[in-house]
Structure formats: structure tokens, C-alpha cells
Image 1: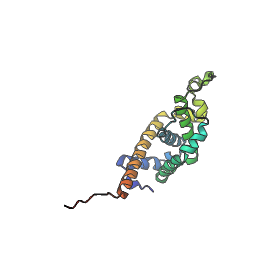
Image 2: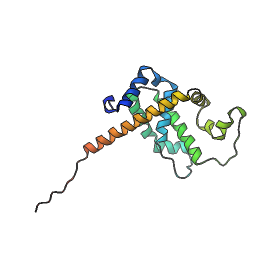
Image 3: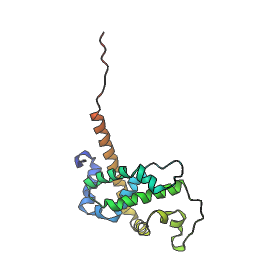
Image 4: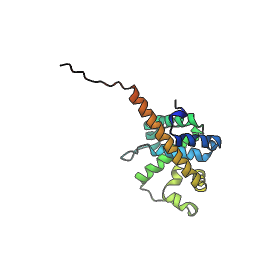
Length: 171
């Protein structure tokens, strides 16, 4: 369990700000959280047969753990965020391993189709990103700091529980 007292001042301020203004309950917060969590997941070096299956086996439990830790500090829609994490991961995978088949570009979504965004993320989510870019940038920045603080605290707890073995030589 993470307490707010273990966080840095900027992270405490961020949690207080998003919680008091109910931004943590917004679609923007879910998108920002999904983006930040998905960026920490390593991509496979080679193409995989079924990406969703690979993701679920390799990373889903770690993703849920990270989302739960954030949710303890500032409650949000973890179910929607979990699906968005997969979408952002799928988008990153498509950039690293582009499909061989020709693209079908729609005039009104040519850029999104060209980069495979519409195959990974819903059009509703893409619209939210376009309409709220400044708010998303602030949320992503705050969440990156929050997750970094959580990692530092976790590392401290691991090192605190480690028993140092020292050799005592007697002459």
C-alpha cells in the first residue's frame, strides 16, 4: 500500500490537484494513465503470432499492479484504462513491426490510418486526445513523476528488507 506521505512534494500536489477537481474520474486521466503505464512495457524484439495473447501473458498482471497503486492514491476507471494500455502497447508494437499489407486510408482519418492509430485506439479516444492535448500533457507529466516516486519508494523498501552479509575476519 502506498501512502501519500511517501511521495515527493510535486507528486503530492499532483494527486491533491487531480483528486480535488475530479479530473481523476475523467477520460483524459484514463488516457494519460494508460499512456504512461504502456510506455514502461518492453516490446518484443521480433514479431509475435498474437499480440494480445502475448501482452496478456507477459504484462497484464504488472499493468494491473501499477494501475492499482495509482488507484489507491487517486481513484479512477481502471477497467477502461486497462484496455487503453493494451491499445497504446499495440500502437507501439505496430510502429516497431509495421504490417506488410497495404494501407486503406480514409480521407477524414488519413493520418490516423496511415500510422495505424485507428487499428489500435478507438476513434473516440483519438478525438479526446486531439481536443484535450494540453490537459493530457499536464496529466502525463504528473503521472510520470508519480510513478517514478512509487518506483523509488519500492526500491527503498526492497533494499531496507535486504540483509547485508558482511564477512568478519578475526586475526
